[in-house]
Amino acid sequence: GNMLFFVNCLMTAVFVLTMRVATRRVPPYTALAIVYTMASCLISVFVMAVSLSDVLRAFFCPDCDGFWVIPSGAFFALAYWALGSSVVAYSCLTFGAKHAREATHCLAYTAV
Image (cartoon, rainbow, N blue to C red; front, side, top):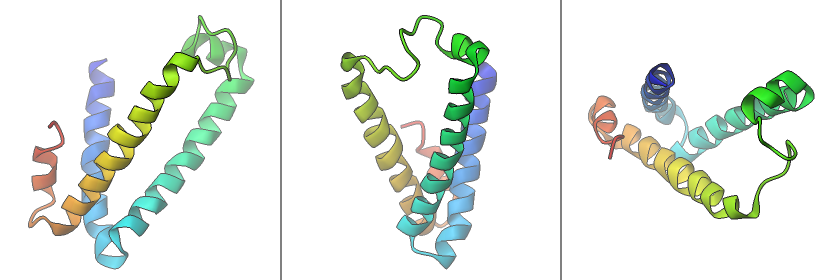
C-alpha cells in the first residue's frame, strides 16, 4: 500500500513538472489531451493482457462474475472517478503548472 501511494505521488510530481515544460510549447489542453491519449493506449494494452491471462484475472478480480461485467451500482462511482478525480483534477493541475511561478506550488495543493 505505501509503495503504491509513493509511486502515485511521484508520478503526480512528474506530471506537474512535465506539464510545466509542455505547456510552454503547446496549449495546456492539447498537452493534456496528449497525456490522456498515451495513458488510454497504455491502459488498453494492460487490460487486454490481463483479460487474456487466467492467472492475472484471478489476481486482479478473484470474485468477479465475468471480467468485462460492470455492476450497475458502480456506474455513478466510475463516472465520478473519471470526471471528478481525473479530468477536472488534471485540468486544474495543468492550468496551475502553466500559470504558477514555480511548478512546485501546484504540488502543495494536490492533497486538497
